[in-house]
Image (tube, rainbow, N blue to C red):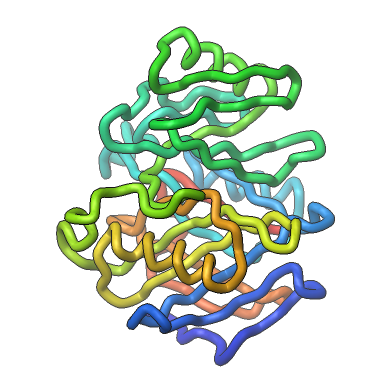
Length: 275
């Protein structure tokens, strides 16, 4: 059973964490917006036996968790062999070296150290290189150059960075799919992650559509709604719902805002926000 959303817009941590609903595109979409101002709220990704990895990290760090969900797709449902689909490096450890060239056109970077700790970048692999300035400075065309791809992996391994792949549905230029693909495929619950700025502040924004929606159209709606609300959107990626429909969202006092049935223990990978 899923808990209903808190009523109305809510603000926590002196405005650095806000939740709001929007039905201007015909369906209710719930947004969880994390301001990166002051580096108070951070993101972290787990991809190596993620449930146990997350449990050990929580014991060590004792964080206040705001949201837990799944990031990348999985290669299978086999507990012994499954791993995130596509190129994946977890905190400097390569989990999957195989780039999904045809399907997943976003490379997501989660920073684990330095001034960018807890930050997220989204790279459009079709049009842009991975630009790095943590530990070294460089540009790597991950999709187009095998040599650059190896350099990017070595950079992530050396400097403890995290990389994973996802579908990119919306970026600074608008939608990232053909017009005739907007309503392609079946409908289901959808979840997305947007990276954006507003008034000079970076934001990570998780958007949840609990009712049936088309894959591409949902991502487009999220990008358009955020743009209409004054955000400059750099990327909207799809988050895996599939067989691992996990979403746990809390307020700053650990009260549940939203919780689906799937437990953390069932997942291949996790992306979380905490302070």
